[in-house]
Length: 275
Image 1 (cartoon, rainbow, N blue to C red):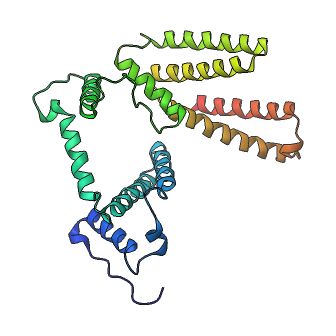
Image 2 (image 1 turned 180 degrees about the horizontal axis):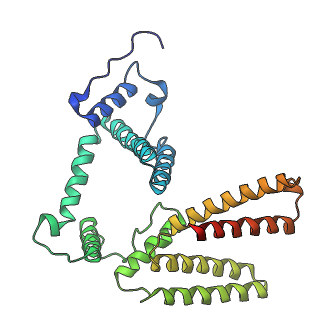
């Protein structure tokens, strides 16, 4: 691009305001062609990607990566607000004011005269206020839960909301028994060769496993992400070990792969036991 570069204002010492000004210049005349072409909808994939990368950084507890990835998420918020401000719909300030007011409204035990003795009471109070604000008190209790989320996260959110109404196992053992029950029904459907019934029962089994994970105090998405990482790590190590034995992954038999897999798994467990 020819011509002198646009001057980036210092933001009056406010880092967020400076970011906002940089984005405004990128979207303005003489700015970046790519940034000017973006819309609310076109940026959705980037928002999702940046959110997942931020989650990965947070789980790794890498401070530098966390700082960078959270910055990328913040950029998406600022960009969306800038696009909206160009047509007078809303801007970054109104977004900030709105969330601050929501936090005050939904924490009456901090900013008002209400009381909440523990985190569970806080969550129940939050949901009650949220339903009242959105006018959904007369709608089904699970109305809107998990909307737009992946199925795994939706299952978790549905179960957590139901638990707030008291519909929950009193202990993880009850959820574990339900997993066993659903597994038996899957086995029965498979034996009968009923594909439609098998599909339904597999869904019930997945739902029950998510419930067990939640009732055991874990997050299903995080647990599955860790399992994915472990599988990837072991599979890559298996491929390398096979290559060291002069075998290509594609030509190795299942028995050979299983033998290497078990060796690697046992080695990991032995190393963990020594730590």
